[in-house]
Length: 568
Image (cartoon, rainbow, N blue to C red; front, top):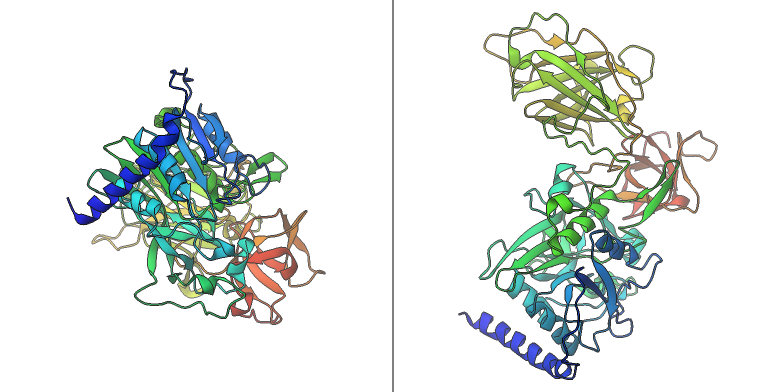
């Protein structure tokens, strides 16, 4: 046994000893235990200044409690100045702004040793006056030893962040991506390419194989560095935001992880941000004509998956994905398509004799943001297949936008066969071919005029393209896409709308310009450029490109770093 493990084992012994005295004072008569698992939210407003389950407003955790309840659990709150209920199954502590005192930690770990699991979410030290657990605290060291989930110092910083933008929660947001290796918790995020919103995040670890533990990373961000100088996160100081090599981590950093202790058969979910689980942030709702929907579906799905995993609910009994959204994974498989959504269009006569490049049938549909297409070939499709679309973006009946999709990406084809990568698009080849195209390029036409299959790599014996002889209908599914933007690593400055009613996206940087769309508060936008004054920013979503006033958005960086769009 290593010296490190001996020392940490001693910590566990001391904690349990500290907790034992209050426990001996309890009534020793056995009490009946309800069959439903008990989830206890820690409520210590003075000592820990944590997010509260008794608050139903933006800073509360009542939505998270409702998720546990929908999974069949009882929820309650408890104060750590007294022993926790012996029948507790899961202990929840979200966004404490102060370190957990040793006697409080003793009461938590007493229940962990008796079989309770943990859901913990810690903000970085120094962010918005927070000073929670450090990597050397007793709790952090126990998490690393018992579950292989170490807690690291530093707030994740992107190049476009500024001291002003990180000084407020509303402008400190960062999008996290599902870790590319699937596990039981992040599998839906990975399958549906869902980002997760965070507000001031720190990084954590996931050691796949420990002495008595196994851990998995959930979400990550590829960042410039993690700022470990807490003074630099305070706008009132003069310390600059800058990387300190040797102290600040850089690159792909994990923001959420889960771990399991094989000795105690207990579990922990450790998140490097608290707001991602709070009512008015990650678990917020937005109103539409069809009703209320999760504002950030990725956060909702992650919270559901974590809750089910901690309660050890079998996958078939876990909560369903939020309704009203398109749940089609662009993975090259047909299992999430059906004739009710989009009837197939069969191919007519074809002169192509290479069955893996010959269309059998195709189908398509669109939701509020994307065009989805599935193509079935006469034999398993060639991995090097290329799909060439002629799309009717103006509804004129003829093709005016040309898109090329293959394994290297999805591109807009311009004059003289020039190609431009199409952000948000996706392409996959498996037993079928699947393509996702943002509606800002595809338009709202009711049919695809042209669709051809060829190869991205020329064959030894060339074959002509196989083109559908009929137009492919595009029915509207009347669903929302689960991501306003399907982002990629290295995405730049982002905005979220900030309004009491709707924020107007206009055709030009002027209040006199036509309104393209009005968006509710909290909607995510990609920043493309700005006018010379910087009071208007050109933005895009999957469906729209337009201009938005500085008065109605939050930016997670300095908009003046954006390029000036000519003519503005």
